[in-house]
Length: 422
Image 1 (cartoon, rainbow, N blue to C red):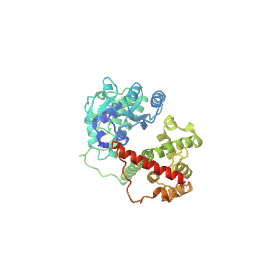
Image 2 (cartoon, helix red, strand yellow; image 1 turned 45 degrees about the horizontal axis):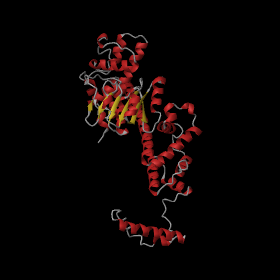
Image 3 (cartoon, rainbow, N blue to C red; image 1 turned 60 degrees about the vertical axis):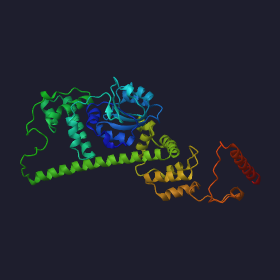
Image 4 (cartoon, one colour; image 1 turned 60 degrees about the horizontal axis):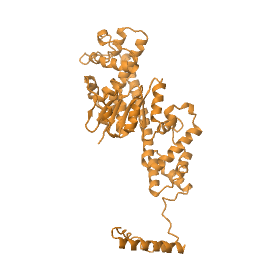
């Protein structure tokens, strides 16, 4: 059984974050647990791609590899990858991705710049772990995922400071001061990350000065006697603490909204295939008719999940419009007739979308969908002469051909009689 903690390991942190390498995990992992790795993708925008639903996957990746100038480039979580598609993806350069292959793909590991991981055996095929002291420290010292996320973001923030300082032509001392929030023995890891992420050579640790306590930006280390601060200083510290707490809370709220949108879309697409197909048709229609497509990036334009996320963050902030819901229930695009069970699936989806049951019932009634009401008695009572509570007689085995033949003749006689009485 997969869990999100399977991938919160120092090796994955080293590969995905510090070494900035791409990863292939096989066999199947569900997207929820695969996405646990996005905590290690600071500086990137995680994008989910289902290779089984995209005919032009390699075109999207090719385009992104040559046309991405964003300060926060994408990293793709690609699921459902078979051998053929993996071979096509491996040839594309300058794209960050984490792939989940549904087949045994170990044959592609030798000589590949991608790191391959066999989930069943819990072994890497082409990765010799370096010193992982810093990675172990970051994980073991984090009491929960939020703290771990903040630590990774802090490293990314320091790396951005280093990039800015070097562009400004700053000397070694400001660089050492930016790094002083971390133990010096870990500086080389942060410098290596900055080098790889920004593609800019960083100075070596031995070329940076030792930082005295007065130079350091961090608070004094444990064991240093505390001095009583003035009320003004304490007030300022409290104000800074409140600001940091608010920023963290805002960050958590944004992440919670993103998770809610993902859960909504996942529920729509996995609860019932027919209902999901109708939704995709309507989503594309809405995009064409009501959205300024120049505001959409490539993925928002062509990938339904990203289209839905864009709409929920801009056009449908409060809720999905009632007229869209009404059209969805009518199922006119796919001309699919809802069964009783599928009406129940709709109800499950609407609960996830926080659509009231009263609206659902009203829309069903207005669209003349009667599946939820008791079926009316048949017009021709002769078709149901047998007692309803009784179980149907089993179909005889074809191996007992005489009995099967007699049963078949009897059935045909009943059908013929019913047709004559109509």
